Amino acid sequence: MTLSLTFLGLMAISTLGAASQSSSLDAQTVFNHFYAVEQLAADMTPRQRDEAIDKAYRQYLQPFITTANPKDISTENLGTIFREMSTVNFFFLADLTPKMQSYVEEMHARSAKTTTYDHDMLAAFVRQRQFDQARLFAKNYHIDTISSLPDHIKITPELNGPTELTLSDDGHTLTQEPFVIRKPVDIVVVAHPLCHFSANATAYIEANPKLAKVFATHSQWVMPQDGSLTLKTVQNWNIAHPTARMSYVYKYKDWPFVDSWATPTFYFYKDGNLVKKIVGWPPVDGGEGALLNELQELDLLK
Image 1 (cartoon, rainbow, N blue to C red):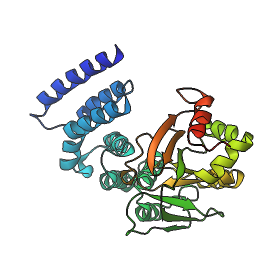
Image 2 (image 1 turned 135 degrees about the horizontal axis):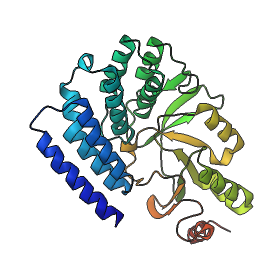
Image 3 (image 1 turned 180 degrees about the vertical axis):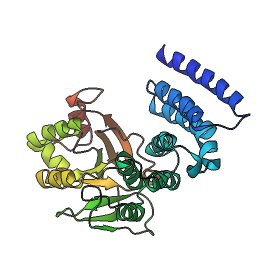
Image 4 (image 1 turned 180 degrees about the horizontal axis):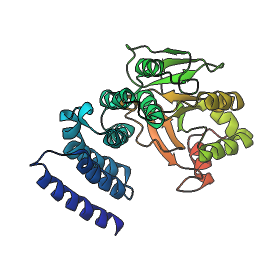
């Protein structure tokens, strides 16, 4: 019933939007339409949400930011449109970092309060893996990057396929490396140190000697492509959990074999082929026993 109401609401908004296209959109109109879609999207599946926000972006936000000059927009509306661009960027529907930067730089030129926008701008750069731009932006506006960027980031542009960013033991260097699904069996775990479900799953595995042995030799742990690197947190996690060391996914687009970045999610591979996916902790289907059952199916519990 909720989804039916949602789609009716989207149809109504779409109808209103179509009528408004005959005249130029102002910032408040863009916000009103875009915000309404965001609220309705809260009740959708991830795919439906992305489609709805993408449609709102293309119908309202994109025409506005394509033609509007930031210098002609009020300071309040600069912030309003910046936040909507940040939403689009967050869901990887479009890379709007150049436009976002022009808006926040205009706010800086007016000596407006920009602390929140600066943080969001840095997060947008990091999320899109535009580390050089993030560092330059931080330098130009004297923004502290101790927690958001390591001292050294080693990117290898010629690498193809899925890659990950590994954090050095001292927490000062990120290095891009190829990610390879190992044979005959591999368990790819999508997790995050700040996700208590991930932490609970790790504690369960580490408390069981047989499970701990299996995951020590047959698992690879990766974190979603996010705008916050939480360097110290990841460094501490990797020290405390050497058999569940986490690395950062470089870019989602190079990982088409992962269809859910919810944490934790366990992907089980045999001879390079996906044979099972377990979502959540305790797992949505089968509870903790689902993990044990799959390891037995793969003949890993001996």
